Image 1: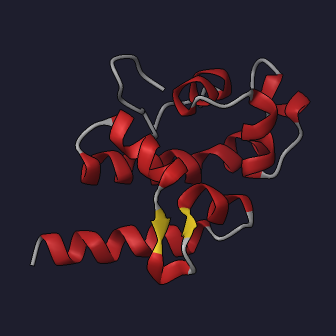
Image 2 (image 1 turned 180 degrees about the vertical axis):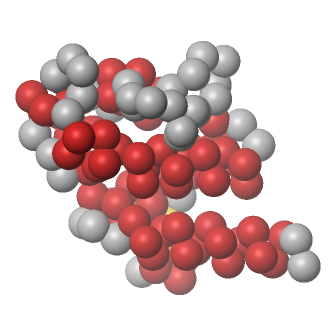
Length: 116
């Protein structure tokens, strides 16, 4: 993750600590969110499983940032805004339950409407 409120989804190794900080959550909650152990996210360097678990979330946050205009707005949306079409659950709740693809689809639908 890069500084200045931007996320670098294609970086060689995602930084779990920086991502947790950007989301305003402890590393243990980030681990739960992406389905890996806290110790695997705390490892330096991150293992393959942890990197692969973080990348979809990073991509989602990059897409949300593009839609929202800033990382801060994207994080607020991710954590606090219920998505009506997905059962009034937040993106964070959906990701935690393994439904990141549904959230990505929701963002694609919003982008399609915005650019058509």
